[in-house]
Length: 223
Image: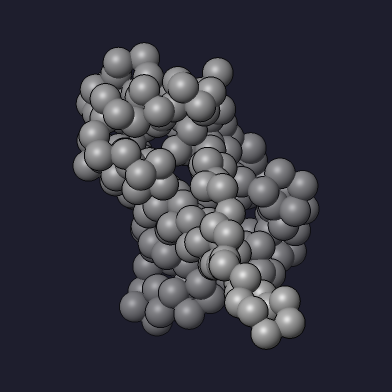
């Protein structure tokens, strides 16, 4: 499933141009004309990344991002400011509001695409590591007692609940795809694909790709 990106800009030409470019790059895109509409779409669709103008009617980009960062579910949402405001003071305000990258207009679509790809890769890796850490914490063995005797701890069965991105990488691995082919399919760099493969090897306690693929097939981890 393509990753969803939200574009907030009061300029219809910018919205359309960025939307067309990102959809050609393989992303899904929704658009908003102002900050209030963008906030509503965020709550409804939970996109993977936000690209926002600053100067918009009603709720501007600064207010939008400040409100986004106050919500726990959006604390790690990658945010790009795409704006004509390009003084040092305005960039500082933007970073203080919570944006990750500040791109001045006019901009090159290729640069915007590279920034989006980098932020999404980093966000996916952080999410993957946090989910794995949470599962590891929840599986710590507990000791119990019956009278004065210790009862041996019983380790829970291993969990094979992967992130959506890990499932996609694993599925393509089982089809014999290389890192480069997986990267082209999922819009990731080969280096990032290798990180996902390493995470899969660790979670399944396998030592190489052949073992991982065999393990996945034997345990019906892929469709």
